[in-house]
Image 1 (cartoon, rainbow, N blue to C red):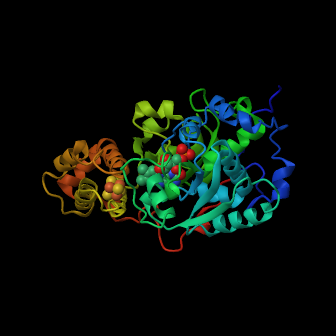
Image 2: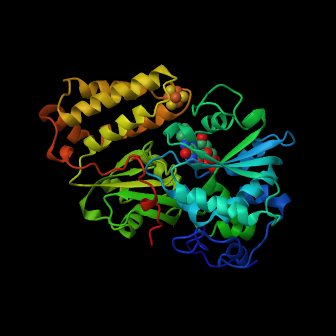
Image 3: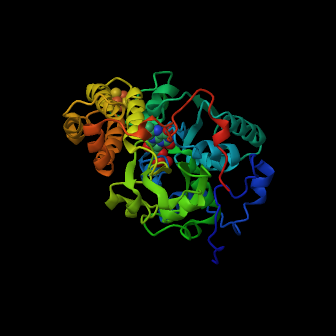
Length: 432
Ligand SMILES: Cc1cc2nc3c(=O)[nH]c(=O)nc-3n(C[C@H](O)[C@H](O)[C@H](O)COP(=O)(O)O)c2cc1C
Ligand code: SF4
């Protein structure tokens, strides 16, 4: 079979600028080459051959998740578009521009696990995504494309609300809190039924694999990280926004495309507010795939890249993120609730001039094993990962702050965005 030449965009290929693809446009094709049309029974094999990994953060192999959900017990499919990560806009953008592609992925994955019902969770404040999705569902009604009933569920803001056990509890009318108590959703999820939770971008890739095949999927990306991914670039760049990249793309290329002054960068945050600071010298030599990022202690996560220029302060930015992450603790587990608040307190003191002489020693101790791995979910692990990377990457600055107090940049307007009331629609455009 001859394959169409590898090119981007894929996920956003048929989306008109600033609007959602209609069902007619979607059915007319995406211009990515003649469809291979994988038979439904062969989908699981094809997803495995494609090497697709989840795009919601943990990069778990999608075929293995399809296997894990026990078939035949009225399974449920949950499409996760909760997008609790404040620096990410990719899921909202995908849903707003290519809702039909996501819904095809929902229908295919639902059929693959024998689901009787599908629920698409959307971040509540992402109005454009909710409207586009509702319109897309209305267009599909009676088209025969949805084998199971699909409903939309808005999810309020909150970092931990998009975690899969928290999502299941909310869908069952409970609180948006994770739980570590087995059984996990794949065995017993929504309504006590086996539940497959899959990120909305992952499902859109499933739809593309069904349409064009695994060999086509692998024509972009690396052997270990095949395909494309949506990334949200923010911070010190002239053109922030969502871009689709081939996995393995040099981070320098992405930053240049987003209009960063790569000669004046201090550090880059990769993987989101649960992610890892990399010094600029390291980041500019890195590529965006997990095999390359792992030895640097980083991961692409949900595709967030935030650039910190030389005139910004890594201590103040990290202090602000740590305070926010501490506030996102669900308050169920002591080490998470108290530990993250204590870590944020020390960083606040360093950035605002009230640090105790042993502030850095305390931070090293608390992030060294007293908090991470001791919660019901991985929230404290992610928050600690961020702070630990700051302790290394901003070591000299931290030492300076501890001895001399805050720097001039500590008082500047913060660069990295955190949720604000009503601050959504303007930032979800795809970057050209
Ligand atoms: C604290 C926390 C928050 C999370 N938030 C999200 C989220 O907003 N969206 C998402 O898709 N996955 C989120 N995840 C990951 C989900 O639990 C789950 O692994 C994912 O939805 C599975 O989809 P995937 O395999 O397609 O990536 C979060 C995980 C944690 C620990
Ligand atoms: S670890 Fe933190 S966020 Fe996760 S369930 Fe416990 S208190 Fe909540």
